[in-house]
Image 1 (cartoon, rainbow, N blue to C red):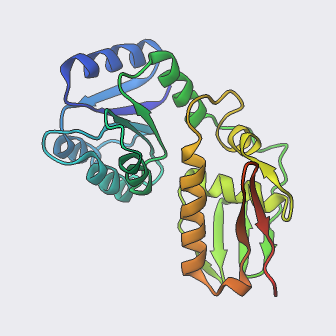
Image 2: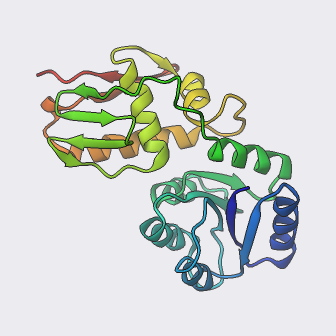
Length: 231
């Protein structure tokens, strides 16, 4: 059972989400505005939050930013009736891990939640540290350090970096990365992959000189490749 936070001011949508998610065995708290939702995080820890961008008090993007600060381990999925691509990108960059466009299809919603909450057993995976230049990745502790300083990464940012780092120099297809990092049965937009790659590039670029760290190359029409550092 997962602990879910629903932040949605529309009574019809909120009630439908609460009912459907509860029937699937989740513990659901439904909040009608951003301020109440953020106050609620003081006493509760959530596995996943569904955040409406069009809230009556705070903009949903601001809620995502604040929620990321107080509950960094909480997966965020934004719900939006906005069709502009930039709104979605800003929401993802603000802290969200994924988005769904209203009207939300419940079958897709449940599939996305299962994908995000999936926790694969690590017993059969290589837990040895990975080193590329000044970048050190420790799968066992899920820590990333650059020149000895810890790099703060979101859950999927870590998973994506680890997946790329396991095969440096190998061209990895978009569908391969989506299947390995998100879910084998993922359906919907893969824009979240591009936003996570952009976030990783930005964090790595700010952490140390480019020559001492690997870089992520875009392979147009194919996917991405982690390039080992030149030194």
